[in-house]
Length: 125
Picture 1 (cartoon, rainbow, N blue to C red):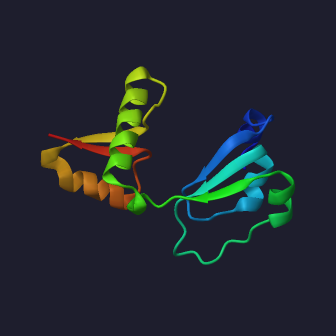
Picture 2: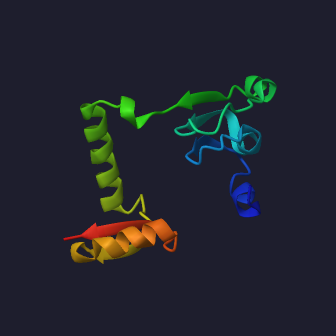
């Protein structure tokens, strides 16, 4: 974990949301507050993760799986409403790396494939 993250999380964080698929719980546990939650949403291709059960147990840490494919239409609509509200209020910031007009969709795809853009690639009409 980067030093800046550790400094910001001195009191511990409530939720660690792993999206990388690495599921490195030994690295996230020092950041979690007592009764923190770890959420995983990827990792089908990486094999079994090792869980530090003793440390999870003594700190009341819970592990949750999240597969968006299990979400209902109502769940997705509710999440979209929340995200749109948070974006509009400025409480949630999106990281847009590049914006392409629709006529340049091939360029947007090439940028995504090359990994040359940091952040989301947005294609607009």
